Image (cartoon, rainbow, N blue to C red; front, top):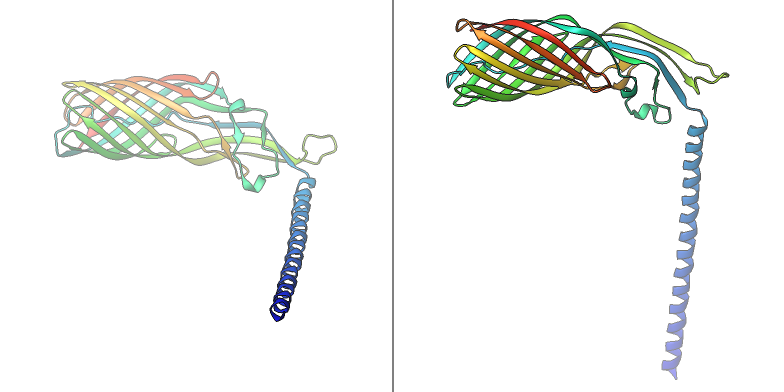
Length: 301
């Protein structure tokens, strides 16, 4: 009889403990449910406040910048002796047809967290201004180890550029690749208006404009190939880059520019050579092809 009473008391105590635990668990669920609802309501209020403040609209009525052909890079123009190095100083002149390339449909404002709730700028008119008479100067060093050539250079063509080169050099032909940086010095002109829902009859817009020179740093890269027979040589060099302009501290996405140089030259002495050839430039936009000619001299040390 005493065993039965002990069992009943134990069972009752266990049941009461279990019921208290269930009650405590229910209270915790209610507490966390209230916390979640408060947090969700707070987040909703913040998002609603941000969206209800209105969006900033920017209209760029005119954007124009001068651009240059991509820099030219080529190899040694002759079979270079193994385990030897040489310095080359090159000066060239260029004449390309003057042309304005319409890039309105290919220009946009880069995404930015600072303007997450603003509309991207809308471009009414955008163009590249390219061509005309130009010049370049460059100093390079080329080093050959067995069949491979490596080196680098520093030059100027509407801005400073630097590059490193890696390729192969054999008895009658050579090829290789290169990459570097190009600090394009560009004449930029733009004007537009910005404001909340700018363009509406009851909106207030502020106007902005600029017409000045700016330097924009880009990466350029390409490949080259050459043939040479005694003192006569032929070169093909293709390089490309994409300008990185800005409007009112906002980065822009603009079309890339690729340039092909096809030249023929003659080395009169071990230290002096002359070259002449044609240029074809392609902008990644409708009707973006332009042509020109080039000639220059190189001195070797």
